[in-house]
Every structure is written in structure tokens, then in C-alpha cells.
Image 1 (tube, helix red, strand yellow):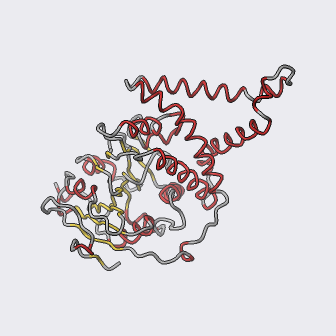
Image 2 (image 1 turned 45 degrees about the horizontal axis):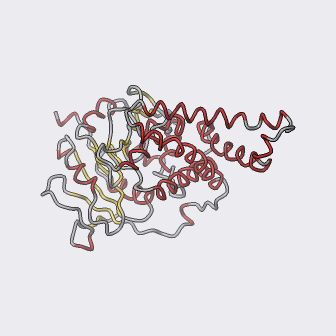
Image 3 (image 1 turned 180 degrees about the horizontal axis):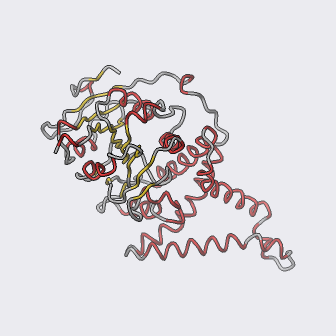
Length: 350
């Protein structure tokens, strides 16, 4: 019964001139009444500004945020409607999963992202964990997230001084005001991880920097766990400064030898995690994932330290970025979405 369903705007951030936006075809394939569905593509070079501009042009009561390469399950919107009738629910989200046909290296990255040791509670962003439940920003991710439009606009949208982690700060604020966030492990999208080691490394550094900057602007106790990796980096540096080789020289004080004990326990934990990952049947991928778990902690920790000392400019002090918002027909022939410059959809005034 259409009259009982809320209106939904699917909002997709894309680059200027990006001819093919994979998420558009997937959005058109959602099992939802066309008269209740609105699809917007926001083009630009600052995702938080793009999404803020598109939210103002949105027609839906709810916004379904997708990245340009997110492929949601067709029943996602109907699945989410069971939560949307509760006025306290402000967001609904679930994991983004690596497609089964992704290249081997990406499958390894997916195992790392879904690792409890590497990402703690945030592994729920990359793997279906548990049952549907009230959650925190640690378990939700913007590439697969529904949000109540009026609640978002009431808070002024995303903080454009933050990227990434702009959604995490907003979720924290919604919860402070009594809003409820829902995690549903079956509310999924398919989305490929980073294509190579270089981009994976950059992602980890960026995620860490974003968390450090978020903590500076919006400090909460919820970020305490995220400071374990930066403390781990300090610990490793302290071992290096003491000269690791001397720790095993006869006559070295026992106290000094105790310094290396945490590292031994840590490496044992990595091994145990590797064995647990191997239970998925991907033995070689699990072996390859173990050194990447260590790399994840080190790079994320370095990123957090960087984020604690970067120069943050408020949104109003940043250069004005151009954002073009396009409204996409919900029902149209199957074709690539083109940019306005190439004769595609007309931009909206925002």
C-alpha cells in the first residue's frame, strides 16, 4: 500500500564529469513505488558539501545515502520501512560487502576490514554482525545509510570541515539529542574495497586522520577505542628507541625484556585472528590478511596522530566549491548516467 510508505530520496555523490554512476542503475532497481522515490546525483569535489546541497533539493522524507559504486539489495527500502514508523529512529544502516567476484587482493582487504582485531565493532560496517539492533556510529557507514531528512537539516547537515567522519560526528549529535540509530545486518550493499595496496594504505591513513579531527571538533568517550592504535604506534616507537636487538642480549634487565611482552601477545592475537579468518575457507587470503592487520593498526594510528595536529578551517573559511545536483528519472531506459556537459540530465538550482 503506497500511501503507508514514506517518500525516499536516493542521494549519490559523484565526481564532476563522471559518465557512469553505478549506483544510479541500482537505485532504479530498488523495489519501491516510483511515485515515492526520488534519485539525486550531487557532483563536486567535496562530498560533504555535495550531500548538503542535495539534501536541500531532496523531496523525500528520508534520504538514502549511497556512494557512486554502491549496489543495494533491491528490498532494502522495504526492509527499512519496518523501522521508519518509530519517530525516535533517525538513521538506519547496514554493512557494505565485497562482491564475491572481486579480485583476490580485494578479497584480502575485505577480510581485514571484517576482522574483529583490526576494526573492532566497526567490522559491522563490512560484514553482517549479529541481529538488527540499536547501534552507534561505530557500526554504520555513509555508503549505505538512510537518514530522516528533517533531523539532518535541523542539525545543519554534515560538518563540511570534516572529511571523512562527517557522518560519524552527525550520528553522535543525533544520539545526544535522543535519536536512535538502527543497524540491520541484512540491509546491505555490494561495494568493492580499494583496488590496490597503495589506495588501501591511503584509506587507512585518511580514516585515522578523520577520526583525530572528529575528536578535536566533537570529543566523545565513544572515540576512546580509536586511540588504541595511536598508542600502539607510540609503544612500537618506544621499543625501537630502546633498540630491539638489545632486548635479547644476555644481561639485559628483566624490566626491559618485559617491554617486549605486549608485542608477543599482540602477534599471538594476530595469529589467532588469522586462524579465525581461515575458517571462512579462504586459507591463502587469511594468511595474506595477517600482516595487513598489523599494517592497519600502524597506519590508522599514524593517521589519528596526524589528525590531532592538522589545521582545521571552518566551512565558511573554505573556498566555495561548485556543486551540481541532478534529478534522475526513476524509470528510464537502461543507459549510463551522463554529466550535464555531455548532454545528460539538467542540473537543479540549489
